[in-house]
Amino acid sequence: MKTMFKTSRLPPPTPEDTASRIQFTELSAGYAGHPVLHQLSADIGALATTALVGPNGSGKSTLLGVLAGVIRPTSGELRHVGSRPPAFVPQRGAVGDALPLTVRQTVEMGRWGERGPWRRLTRHDRALVDTVMERLGIADLSARQLGELSGGQRQRALIAQGLAQESDLLLLDEPTTGLDPEARERIATLLTELVADGVTVVHATHDLDAARSADACLLLREGHLVGQGHPEQLLTPSTLARIWQPA
Image 1 (cartoon, rainbow, N blue to C red):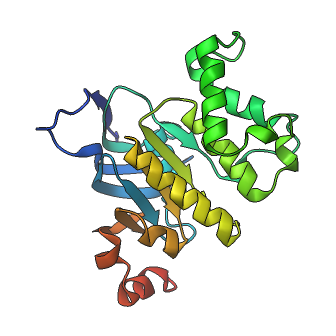
Image 2: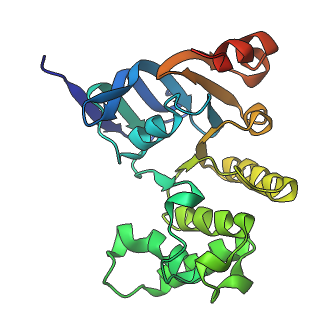
């Protein structure tokens, strides 16, 4: 059977326009013939934090990859409202410890979309890297190897790389997993500040505390969207028991 997929980028919204930053309809995706997402339809609000919630294997990371443009859907329609491509921050474990990268080099990679990997950074690029490193509190780690950092420091370096892309849409895969409470709180505070600064944040998580602090949630189970709305209405004991119960 022939599958169809359509993607488009709409102009930035005016105040009279919809508050959606991302819209997808009947979206399906998978890997090498193995379906993962099954006909998902939802709107993700602009200037808000949306949490993708569900157990391991529910399709959170796959959906995030589709929204980032690194995974091509097999069918459905995906629309981004805005002119800038999204910035994607993968899980910390997806970035190898053996890579000989300093913290600054890691953040500078966020400018490759503008300059390419082999062109010298401009004065604007260097100033932007300085700014995001200061904001993330990692300027003093500039010369350290990425593999030498603690989990929280490494996550902040990867988020800084995302911010260096100057996107108004930040996509994060499990940004607080494995972090201590202080590091999780620091990341949560940062995400709130970014939304106030005009960035739309979408993050995949199975951390229910992180999900409850979001403005909206999409609940996934076995690749199906089983709920969407405000965390207060969605993340109830009965709903969570249904989502996490064995198949």
